[in-house]
Amino acid sequence: MRKAVLALLVLAACSDRPETLEIVIPTVPDGHLRMPDSPALRRWQYRLEAKSTVRRPVDLEARFEGPVPEGLVVRLAGDTRIPREGSAWPHLIVIVPEKEVSFSGAVVIESPDLAGWSTRFTFEGNVALGPREGRYLRARPPGLDLGKVRPGDEKQFAFALESYGSQPVNIREWMAEDPERVKLPPSTAVSVTSGGEHQLTGVLLVPRVAGRFETRIRVTTDAQNFRGAMELRLAGEVEPDYAPNPPRLLEPTAYPVLQPEFSVDIRAREGVAPFTVESVAGHERYFEVVSLGGKEPARHQLVKLKLRRDAPTDANRDAEFSVRFRLEPTGEEVPWGVRIRLNPPLHAAPGELHFGTVSRSMPEEAEIRLTALPGRKFRVVRAQSEQGLVRVRVPEEPSALGWRVLVSLPGGLAPGILQDRVVIETDDPYVPRLIVPVRAIVR
Image 1 (cartoon, helix red, strand yellow):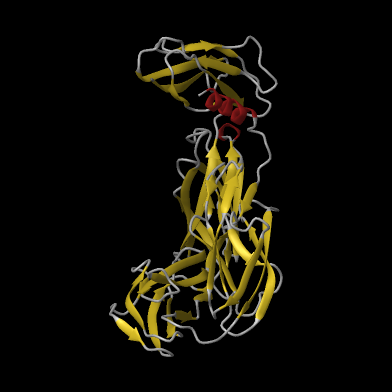
Image 2 (cartoon, rainbow, N blue to C red):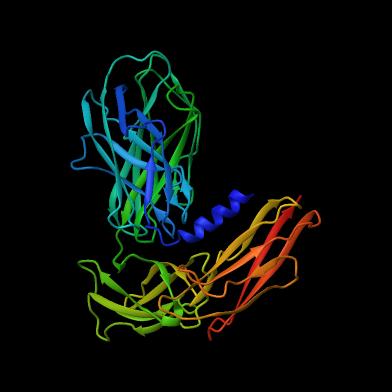
């Protein structure tokens, strides 16, 4: 238990450490991916371990370094959003070409939410064609990128499911990940003879939200090279007539008391009508409208918003919502995603204190740090236990890291769940009182 409390202290002391990501492939310690003698269109999958010290969630993307090797496909799958200061285990997927060829290069993993950061893995391999004994199935193409598409369009697509082994492959069923958006023919059992193929066709209804999208179709088979199902990927980039720049607001920390301003440039695609911004919706709890842009129709309009002084704050989690801009004379509505951490001018870290499971005879102590807006001066006037179940003390002067409140558990506690609250009083006019819940399980 003492180790757990020390971990809390270290975490508090390290809140100013640099923000970065660390990604490794545990099964490939040297970072060099080897894919020798691959059958055509083989899908290689590597489990990544991602650890983040970034104080907000971040998304990961994968691309080839330099020119794309002909026929080679790379992408990330699974848990590609890394939680705030957390861990995740996404998968790196490489699909080799369908013709006999040697290939090499590097894959770069980066994040649109963390400028300047990236990590790199090299690879080499070759495709060896030849007869395969057994039941083998491949899709041609292995994935379909539709490129830039218009919102709401309907796009037809087709995949050829080819049997390239010595025995027939039984296709049991197919199912869209998003059946509202991907329309497929009714699923039926199909036997694909050796050397034969089955055409799977469908229609994709393009999303109406700007940006990249991806969805999948699962095909259940008895092929030896898939564990029950193969996945067919459909992707593209929605390019609407009117789009915001930046496409979304990602702000790690903001203080409503300062009322900072944010700008978003609504732009028209080449060839569509100029516009004005008639109104804004979805912002009311968080933003005030400073300007809707020009009064005359134009190809772009700069909208300015500022944080409301009374916007709801939460130092422990992000606010996520969507602002909608209504355009005239088109009547279009342009969404703008917002993810922002709104801090009060003074807050406690951690916001809740959990001691975990403790022994009745072993007193424990932990620290609550008070974090303020940079340059803001305040004093802790008093801190006390609301129910008298924990001991609370405040050092007379702040440390180099600021004001601290020290909380300890007295000995001889009765077994069970202990719940109390630490009430901290300050001389800050905006945050005169802070309450930190305390919890412990006493053995």
